[in-house]
Amino acid sequence: MRIVFDLNRCQGLAQCVPLAPEVIKLNGEEAITYDPNPDESQRLRVLRAAASCPVQAIIVDQLDESENMTKP
Image 1 (tube, one colour):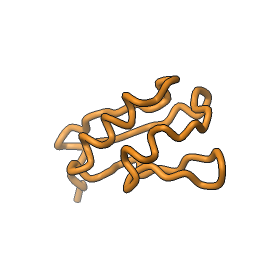
Image 2 (tube, rainbow, N blue to C red):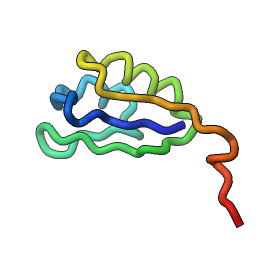
Image 3 (cartoon, rainbow, N blue to C red):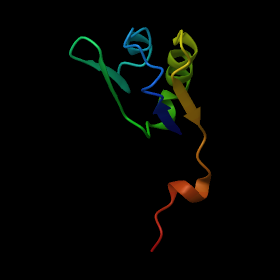
């Protein structure tokens, strides 16, 4: 899974933070930091956090298995 924040849209309202606290954190009063490739076990939390964003600034993509594997 890959997540991206559209920082042009994000207003720092932080409604997403309590829904996925292991993936999305508030840094200071308005700056959001996040893990762009969270563990698959966080999927439901991340999807709920994305759905909670009033400006739809969180994009969640499913990675292909080939993208998860490292190339020799």
